[in-house]
Image (cartoon, rainbow, N blue to C red; front, side, top):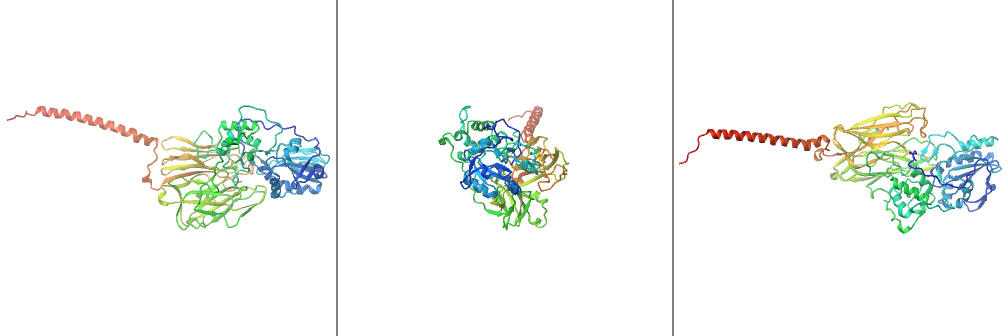
Length: 632
C-alpha cells in the first residue's frame, strides 16, 4: 500500500443512482447465498439491527478488515445484531466469493449480488462499506468500518471506530455519534446499465491500453506477484475500470516516487501524461475491448526467478513462520548457514517471499566468518547483501561486475511482516547466481551514508537529518536506495565532486515506507576519488502523518518500524585492479588532458622557434667572421 501523492489531474468518479442515506428505508430484496439458495433480507435480519456489508474478493481493504468484521459479528450476535455480507463485483465469481468467505472464516452469510442490483438500489459505491438497519429496515448508519485503513495508508492505530460506535449507541437506544461517514476502498465493479456517451476518438483495450499495461502494470499485476489482482487480459481488467482510473489520476499507480527532475533510472515505470490521459478517456468511454485482433501478443515473463537456473537457493529457515491475521509484528531474524566452502562472486541475486500477502520486505545480510557469534542486529546494517520489497526486483549486475562473498560466510534474513486479514505461513528464500572469478573486473559493494545519532522531537512535522559518504578511490555508482521508516517524509542524494561541482542524483519528495525501491541508474556514474555524497532526509512525527505509530514519542535510531533509520545505500563498483582501469575524468582531468598539453606544445614550439632563430643568427655571425675557404 502507498501514501497518496498529489492529484495529477481531475477525473470524476462514476455517477450512479442516488445513494440511500440514513433515515431512508431499505425495501425487501432477495439474493442467492454461496450454496445457491435464494435468501430474503427479512430472513437474514437480526432482531434489533442488521449490518449490510459490501465486500470484494480482491480488494485489499476488504481483506484487511475481515478479522474485524468477524469480531463485530461475534461480539454483538447475542444482542440481536446480524451481519450480512454482499458481493456486487462483476469480476468476482460465486466460486471466488466462496473461497474468500472460507479463507476468512466469516461467521455470517455472504450473498452474491448479480448485476449489482442491490448495490444500485442502495447506492453502494465501494468495498468495504457498511449499512446499519434497525428493526424497521431504516438506515441508521452508512459508511466506513473505522479510520485505520485507506487506499495507500495503513494507520498505526484505530482512532474512530465508527461502525462499532453506531451499533453500540443504537443498542442503547441512542443515535449513532456519526450517522454518515465516507467509506474508502475499492470501487464496486459494476455492470453498466446505460452505454457511455461518445466523448472523442475511440480508445480501446486492444489498440491503446493493453500496450500500456504490458509496459507499466503487468510486471506486478499477474499471478504469483505482488499485485492483488491480475491484469494480463481484458476479462481480468473488467470490473476494475473505475479503480484503475482513480489510482492513475491520483498518482498512486504505477508506484514511482523519484522526482522526474533528477536522474534517469532503468526501472522507472512512470506513465507519461499522454498515457494517463488515454487511460482516463478509455474509462470515460466505458472501457471497451475493441478488436481483439489488434491486441499485442501476450508479454512473456520469466517463470519464477528473474533469470533462470540459479546456482543456489537459500531458505530463511527449515520451518515456516506463522503470521497472525492482524496486529503488529516485530522484525524476525533467521541466521542461515548456506554452506559456502569456498569464496564466491555473486553476479545476480533475488529474494522471494513465501507468502506475498504478508511479507512487507526482506533484508538479507552477509555475516563474515569473523563476525559469527559476535554481530549485533544494529551492526548488520553495514552488510546488506540484497533485499525484497514491493517494487524491488531481482538484481542482475552488468557483465564483469560481481559481489564477493568469502568462504564460511553466513546469511541473516530480516523479515518484516504485515498481516493481511488471514493467518498465513511464510518461508521466504533467496536465489544466488555465481560468476567466474576470472570474469570479474569490478567488485561491487554496498556503501552507506548513514546517520544513527539523531533525535526526532514529539510532534515535530519536519525534522532534518543529514548523512555523508566519501569515496576514498575512483569508483562507479550503479544504484541508490533510500531507507527510512514510517515517519520518513522525503529523501535526497547530493553529489559534491572534487572540482567543486554539485549534482542532485535522486530526490524522493514523498517517501513511502511501503515501496522500498532501489533506483538503478540508466548508466553507471563515475565517482572520482574525493567525491562526497550528502543525503538529506526529513521526518514527520506529527499527528498529521497517518501512519505515525506515536506522535508523542521521542524517536531515535532503531530497526523496528516504530523507531527510525536514516540510510542512503550506494551500490558501488570498484575496479579489482585499480591500475587496470583508468580513473574517471573530472573537469580538472579534462583540462589537464586536453588544454594543458596543447598549451605546453605551444610553449615548446615557441621556445624551440626562438632558440632556432637565435641559433641561426649566431651561426651567421660566426660564419661571417671566419676567413673564406680557398680552393687549389
